[in-house]
Length: 146
Image 1 (cartoon, rainbow, N blue to C red):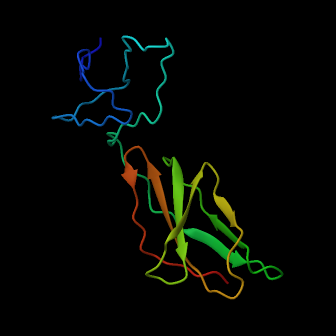
Image 2 (image 1 turned 135 degrees about the vertical axis):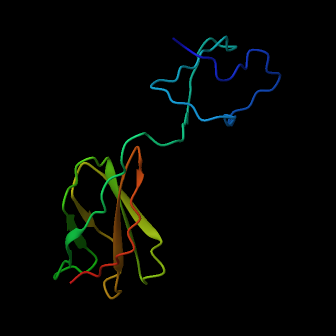
Image 3 (image 1 turned 90 degrees about the horizontal axis):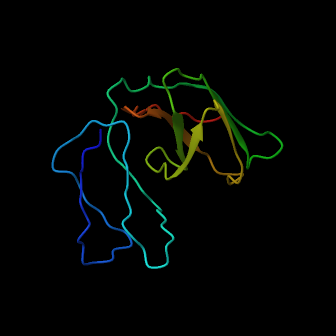
């Protein structure tokens, strides 16, 4: 059974990045887009995004097992953490100061990351957070590589 959420059949504007927000939260498993017509007959969607949270539990807070700088090439750091169940991926933030973690990596399925391109003589600080469709853990524990 399908429920109509937004009807744009009689829209008078052509918006390449149209945004609309529901008045109420909904629970659904699928969303369907129906195209009426396009001038050249080729319908395409780009950037279709849905925001919300699932109904389960967010993941646990991850913990780094090790963070090491390469002794021969300090531009490289090797990070490892314990993989967690109920986790879609991890966000690793890092930077040159505990209050300046401006760089990040997003890692899916793996429980390790190699970062190349660091400044050889610069100290770095790292945090790791886990996420799934139910939320993200906020980890304030900042680690420094050995």
